[in-house]
Length: 172
Image 1 (cartoon, one colour):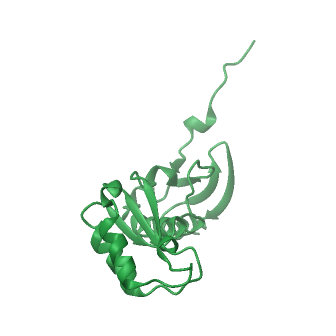
Image 2 (tube, one colour):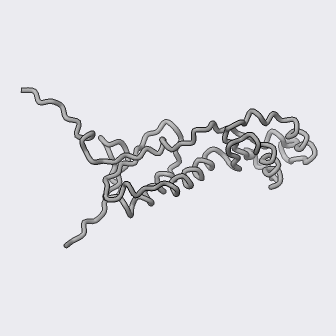
Image 3 (cartoon, helix red, strand yellow):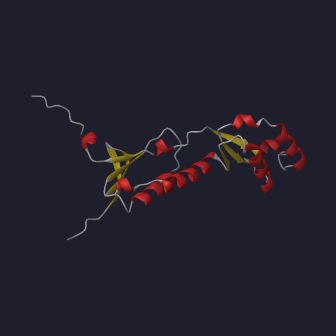
């Protein structure tokens, strides 16, 4: 007699958190100040202001604008401020830094605001393998936030997990 296949993972009490589900929805676009440097070294204020006035800021409508300089040039603080002033009416977010830096900051804030009380005394799997670049810092922070609450924390997929933390049993 053939026994029916039973999906024990689906029947388990595991709660899965997929950090990729919290990934920002808006498109991220770069604004690299290296393109505005004179001889790739310095930022001339007059030329920079002219270039910014002529720039098409509407292309950043509802996007996350990442403002940085990919070269080792010394960029004055006012340059980032000036870009922000021009982009503010259009971009949904203006961030001074790279995509990796933005995602780290974004997840830090997002996870800090998340109500994780629903995971109290639960067995939690933090899903691994994502198609988007979720920063390792987000996994570390989520673990830190869950540890006081969860019965156990695992990493990976529900069918194949790596144990991270297990709450000690209280002796009566």
